[in-house]
Image 1 (cartoon, protein in one colour):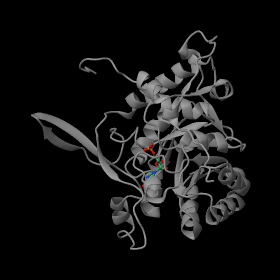
Image 2 (cartoon, rainbow, N blue to C red; image 1 turned 135 degrees about the vertical axis):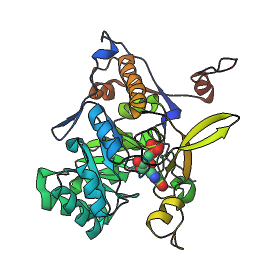
Image 3 (cartoon, rainbow, N blue to C red; image 1 turned 120 degrees about the horizontal axis):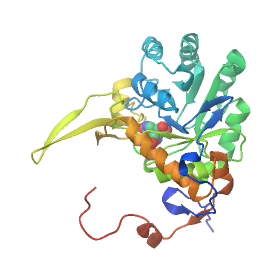
Length: 345
Ligand code: 5GP
């Protein structure tokens, strides 16, 4: 008889409150370290072309998080963008596999980059292994290598063995991703993190964070950082113009946000969708959100509060103490706003 594994994601669980000995949520520390480098926020802005360029990187860097520039620009443009970065120590660059990726890495390392993200949709692959090994051989321990994406213990272990310092976890969980619809593949994000946590490397939870609570759950399930695309989309610091529209006499502002494997992105960067391929992402317009700082403050407020609900003074504490409980559909309904009346905010 056919049998299947069980996987859980954010909405399948809640965190069970535990004893708290911390006086105020102001007193928790959210600092995470990555090979001796400290980040006061466990957040990374995603390397998507509608999320992270120099403006986002500078703001996130100033706030204490990490940013990774996208790679959908020429190497020359990539270098001049990196030169505009004020927080170089907390800004990574991304590369693809093979010789092209290594040439891009070389130009950016020469410009001062020291965080390299080898970014491939299916990271558990031979070419990613080769690229990581080449980077390690060439730059030894002078650079930080982030590699992904994977969603299994075997995948994470493979990248760790190749020499990755941090592993990006998430297949098919992104807000503008259609991989699971197009291919049927993926692992619900919390189970993916729980599996990858068995590998002794820094873990980045990439994709699917919609609310502060998702970030708390991802960190509790083993992530050291959460990577954010959709949550930051539409903020002032993202690339792209504001689109203004009249809606019943009111001006509403939007910004574009798209998956890097969407047809639109493929049209822009790959000269169109090859006829042997299908899009694994979508392009949307999101309501403009204003300064990214406000989004980050709200998110960090939730993370700090969440930590005190289980008496965790640090992210590592949260991982040690967290207890998940699977919820029913009734439990989910109970846990979201359900008062009768008109919502006013
Ligand atoms: P979000 O925070 O928006 O839920 O997820 C962001 C992540 O989605 C990115 O960091 C990246 O890993 C993933 N992603 C971005 N574009 C695409 C795409 O077109 N297809 C897929 N499968 N994943 C994408």
